[in-house]
Length: 201
View 1: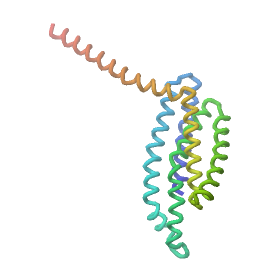
View 2: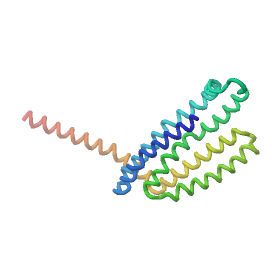
View 3: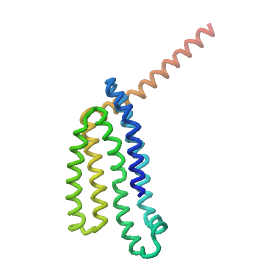
View 4: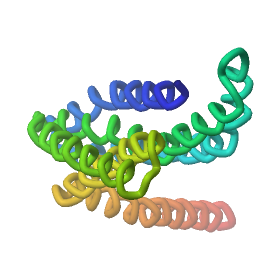
């Protein structure tokens, strides 16, 4: 349930970013487009990574508090814990996909996320077979394969976005920003010195 809640956060963030991404793309402002997308990815990681660690570490107390009663036995708690930890592995990937996909939609490129999703589906099914039957992770293998598939999906979308130049534009803009701020500071310093010199004269 918690993974669904955080996935909804990713959907909400992507929905908020999409109109601005479309506006920046239509105005051909690649720097603003890239900075906004970069901001969305950073916020997603800041939310997802601590949440994933907390979800994995607190899995047993959460499950025991919510479900350990009646016919839900102690062994069931640990079996559910294994699946929840498997889902926690892919929490960041699930949220990042919800932010990266709107980056393609803003460019009216719907085919690329769909193609990546189809390949991800195939990879996930292959991982199901490997984790369940060969590694013998049982039901936890199903959760882990979904998580690895989500991370694969996010990594591939990010690589395609980087290859298109969006990430490079964001990096170059971030490198130029300190220089521009430094130049503004030096200009203000010169103005103050000139003003002080005129006042003393």
